[in-house]
Length: 423
Image (cartoon, rainbow, N blue to C red; front, side, top):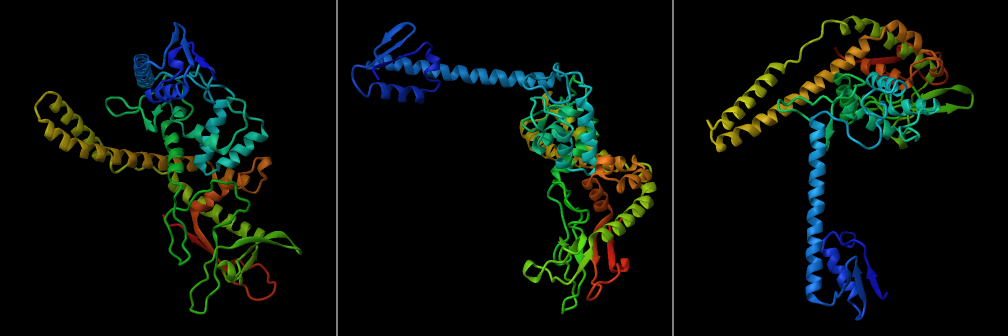
């Protein structure tokens, strides 16, 4: 290398450290030439090196100014409810304000299906089969669908760095674009993904309060629900989770307790189609019983008065502090506790609203229609398997299958014990 010619100094280095490394590299050997748009420069001179280093500092300051201006502009547009640039969001027209008549209904139905218990994988598989593409023309993935339905834009809100943009009163800023779903429906979906870490039935028999929902499309209706009811020598139940297997002389799947080496006892097996049919009918009958309760008058959130009181107290504290009636020490010692309390209550309110939205989605569906679609194939309008499992999950904690004796026996539903949820 005999030298370097540049067109603009800010293209050479934007940080002082970069410029120092460049000078050390080019002056490692004598006689090399450096030139910019104004002519040649002697980098072997300390004065020239110092001027270049100063220019790099100025460039860095300009970059930071640009970044701050962009952040302020982004925040200002968000607070004004204006859409931002970038890739066109799926569901809206290129103006980012009006809804796309083909895409918006797909997003709305996907959110309603997720609330009802359908999995991301089931929805993306259906969209792929129907030829639905992203706004960039790519195939849909569960991860991309998750980003779409979790974006508060679908209900008319904005978020920056994972936080909702709020006005001076603490309420979310409503954007100027048309929403696809209601805020309650979006919060219901957000609550589903926030609650991924659910509880389950432990090996020692302890029962959690919430079973983890399906995030992948399952293959069998009762996987994870069935438990072995064979007694151990000490009188306790095996309680191992039954797995699915197949036999050469049986065209149906079989639910089977794993072998001892796999954590079970291997002593219980039952024909899968008969178990699925019996539990399906039991769950449908249970849904018919609770449908009237689900359609009853909604219950108000018990923390509403406390939430409003905390917000009023914080606002009054701010007014008094702004007017100079209270000291900085008093304000900054009291305000943080109130803000934490408000944040906690706001989260509780969102969880309550999400649960109510989920119950409403259940009650809006006629049990007769559920029963009709339960036994249809999915391609014929039947319920997706994940939605069936969500109904089972909300009705049942588990199903204990007791041994029927040696050899092949006639299916006996009395050897199946559903463990129903309370309430």
